Amino acid sequence: MSRISGRPAISTQRIYGLTLRIARWREGAAGTPLLFLNGIGADIAAAAPLLAQIHGREVWTLDMPGVGASPDALLPYTAPTLAATVMEIATRLGHDLLDVAGFSWGGALAQQIAIQFPGRIRRLVLMATTPNIGAPGIGWAALLDDDMLASGLRLPTATPLGLACQAMAMAGWTSAAMLPRLKDVPVLVLMGERDGVVPACHGQAIAELIDGAVLEVVPGSHLFPFTHAAAIASRISAFLDQSPPLQAAA
Image (cartoon, rainbow, N blue to C red; front, side, top):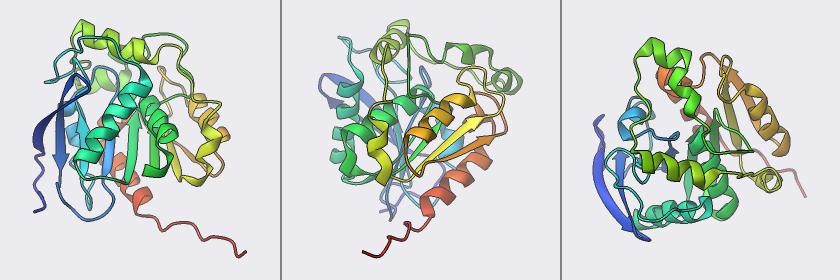
């Protein structure tokens, strides 16, 4: 039975020693489900105004360890381990094929998932993210983001250990060498025109590495998916609903 209301169904999954809270909008809806991966320290509540406006499909997300209602991890984890954990949850939910959207830190994890599980990702949306994380702490400058201060958004909502584990998982991470392998996956890269945390040049670097990727610079600063939720939800939906590109005749 499909859940149509604006409120998500909430559940918990325990996988590889991690207990993670899951939220699902329009559970059981037809079409390819969309997985949304949030920024460092941001929880389900922060994503809800955006995800509730992406219609026509199931949309789901989760609180990372130590974020929101997910308890801290007992041990540190790596990006590949977390990618495997997220995809095991997808399998348990019955989702063999996914669309994935990732914001900031979650955009890096989305790239990791697409690279690590190439046969399971149909379309990829990367927002305010980068192909290279040189050191822990990406996303901290969001605390002083212009749009966030103006809107009253409160991020992050994580424990100190939760933030540290998220930062350590991506310390020194890079996707640059592997992104060309995503040439057969439609990719939309959205960057904020006033983003001082992850400037638009990072999105340009991603688009140049993936043949056919579409780069768009949109109004807003780092938190544009939340402060401009209606416009971003509409753009994501339009991209996911596009017909597949025509294949050249052999």
